[in-house]
Every structure is written in C-alpha cells, then in structure tokens.
Image (cartoon, rainbow, N blue to C red):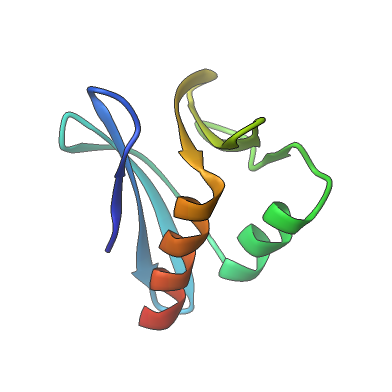
Length: 95
C-alpha cells in the first residue's frame, strides 16, 4: 500500500480489497473516510472528460495539476496525476 501525503494532517491510500480497491483518507493517521470502487471506473475517470468521480463524503476532482481529494465538500489535498497512476498500478498488481 502506497500512502500519499496530502497536507499536514491528511494522507491518501489505495488499498486492495478482493476484486475492488478501497480509497482511504487518513486524518492524523486515523482513517477518516473511505470509498470502495473498481480500478476500471477510476481508470475511466482519469482518461475521460469528466471533472469529478463519486458523490458523497469522499470525492475525486480533476484539477489543473492532478487529482483533488475532497472530503465532506472540503478540498484536503491534490495528488500529482503521475503519483496517482503509480498508486493505482501498485494496487492493480496486488489484486
């Protein structure tokens, strides 16, 4: 599992979960919010013209430099697109 630091308090990880993955945002090392999804839908989001993925407490939004992580309608950080894809590839190899 690859953990990406978002800001001073938040970090992001993609964990393997059977045939799906679990996107997790940690707040000060404690799990804050998570979302289950398939690698296929996340890959589609990256390549599509859509601006956001998911509704609810955890959302992903395309931004100028990468992928924004939104928790409870508040942007908690941005992940470089290359780092996000590498994290996905790591999760993919573990399934």
